[in-house]
Length: 590
Image (cartoon, rainbow, N blue to C red; front, side, top):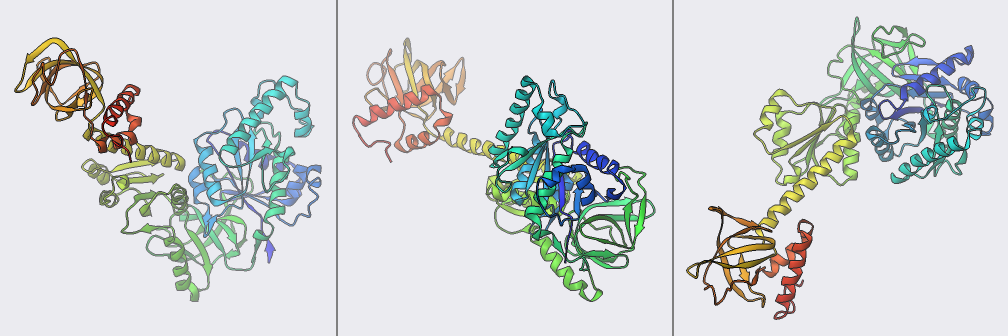
């Protein structure tokens, strides 16, 4: 057994400084001395403990820890798709995370998504409160430590800095995370440490590495024990076409070792893929992997935790986020079965009610499912790939209107599906930020609830108080036609009418204004009202008020839907109830 490097993912909103912080860590490491040069892997940077010690200087000694971790593996592939891909059986692949927040801009959509995923996976993290150099009046002496610079700030600047730090503290608290500036943290198991940083000047980078390394050593040591000589276990980060190599896999290996010519099995949709490693490739030292001209060197073997590019036959059907394992040839079928169980534990296909969920990779899909289930959302079908006609048909088959929805993360609709959707009563919500998909879903649910309630409200007798105008009797009876003004509320044809004593006297036969027949008359409207079975001067009189005669059951429902009634309608509703209860004390009760 050996202790591997902790896998650390750097997350945050676009333009908040993830890359600049990584560049600072890498750059600082390079100039720190030959012994501690970092190794750039596929989508990752390995920072040895020697380098961390040189960068942190005396800071590490203050932790009084006996370091056994060999260093840190920083995942530096940009974008949220990669972050969501980083999963293995039982949750997150990352052992720890750095959440980068622009201290001046605060929390943005991708910041919130990152927190939601970290929270659902129970991944420990620290916060880099970045871009402190942009705080007005900020001055920093490169020869001094972060705390020396902070303590030397002018009063006004210090006050502004503290205010911004506590805005971050408050926002983290809203998500259920007690937090504090790193030098004030009492218990790292109970509080999130916030380290002020500048990706531009490098301020706070030693402190960030110190806190990260200390946390990893103190709280993750047991979790980091691996079988170095054991079979490799990993996650596919990206599937890429490389010139001269064909389809390749960028993989993070988190357990065991992998050699050229080893047999590997990769999880798939429907069936796992078995193949043999043709070559293992690492970027040349300090080569930026995102550059198209990146050059590779071939290696014979790699050990956890690391990133590596794998060249092998039959990778055309490989999908990002899938689990990958090495095994003996005799174990291929057994490992295939195990990996498919792992994959199918994420994919959902049931006959029960629920929405349809699609994502671009297995990891993204699992992250989305976990967050939806936390919100109590039912899922009938979840899979990988673009949205198809079949997905729309599945969504449409749901009997519940709330389930006629498709949520898609980082996916598109096929051309056939787009045409097909126009004919169907299905709502499709897609986005590149998971939390925004969930927010849009919640908004749609609320819209549907409102539509249903408004339809239900439309069937009820609404509270209405109207005045019979003097001198506007157009017909005395059979039916009586009088001019009225709706003082409060709405009344529709077919509604019953009562007098101020609560006695039912008639029903509205028709409504007419300016020669047009109306189905509903609203507050402020003057119109002609036709009334059955009454005679003007007897049951109904000019110059008096009348009310809609609300049935008791309608009254109960109106109380449930009162958020859709105006204040004046609620007052008239109470007035009608008081009139009714003079003769029936329990009217509308229960």
